[in-house]
Length: 492
Image (cartoon, rainbow, N blue to C red; front, side, top):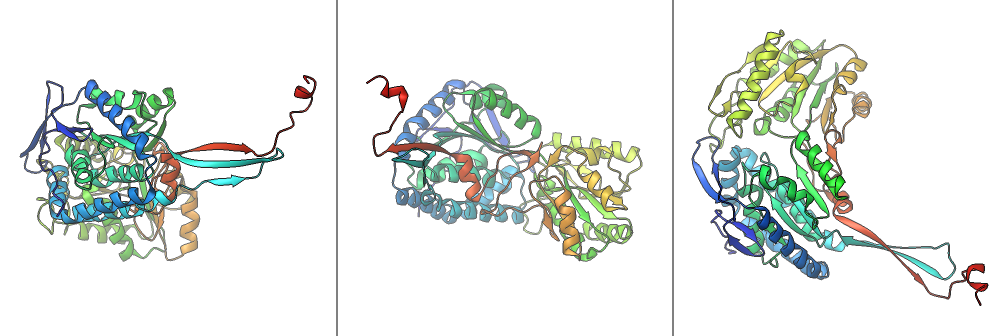
């Protein structure tokens, strides 16, 4: 069995576990029990500089490594993960407040991403193209970018970190990871342990734990990384995009969403309700793809709402470590208070709470609210919590207009027994991803994942992440002497 390091009180630079150089300590706690999990001495800008320098040096050699050797390391990573599955799942539950159901799903999704990434060393394809110049051959090579900076989120920390780490390593890059302060282990340090146990050469993966206010900008503006991969809020993502642009770096940004679920008049109500319940309450709604607004045709609104309310009452909430818990805690109390404020404001404008509405600690009860319109705070803002809002509509053009009213476009869903009708509506929704007769939370390792408008830039997964994490070089070969015409002939 491949033994992992289990002491996560240190940062990881150039193959060494060491204390951060900052005087400040970062306390990591369980969001359900408030139990202290680990305390980490934070990193400084000097630590970050060392991490990027180690990555730069290691990447130069790794870029030339044989593809079968790159693949072998990633296959070993999969072995390490599977051997330590229970340990990893336990950390996902206790650090991010994930339910047992969600933690298992996140782990399996991460394995799938890893398996897809094992194919990338053999997919660094180039081309030979004709030339307009006699005797010339044009070649196009696909090369690694170099060093990639990864800023991972707290909601799906394990999956959304490895979604960038594995493809980056597979395509010949090195990485420096800064995990979210709420999930420094499952969003960063645990990967140093996994890849170390798998035998990845030192320097190719480095993990810096520090406060965004101290090193957040430097992760982006440091001269070494050529791409910044970030998953998180639109506000922070816009700032990262601006910094990257000013420094002529690429950025891959998966940001917030105000995702819509549309039940058309001819929807199968039973199927639609089940889909909406999953897409709304899975991981407490703390998913960028989670349903934010549920639009239901007025002819089926009352039946849909009654069925939805009755099933929502059966959702089990509380301790995420219990295997039958559907809804666990939010990541911190600030998130709870933010949502309660929007609930109160929306109710004051006429919305009605049908289920839930209260919180204990960081656990917000599964909540269903009807009589909502598209202008209320719960509709305008990304909820990112276990609160479902139901909005009636009358005409197709009305629901399309309401769906596109806000500057987000990540995911969505449309339900109808008439597939072509649903597809027509789906085409009119300005979003990067949308699903017919399903819900909005879908992610497959071989399909393009990403948003439009304020929901991000670029695409993850499959051949599309290859485009993000590599660069192209044009190399031409002049096989016969070139005739430069009168420019040269008059000189002879």
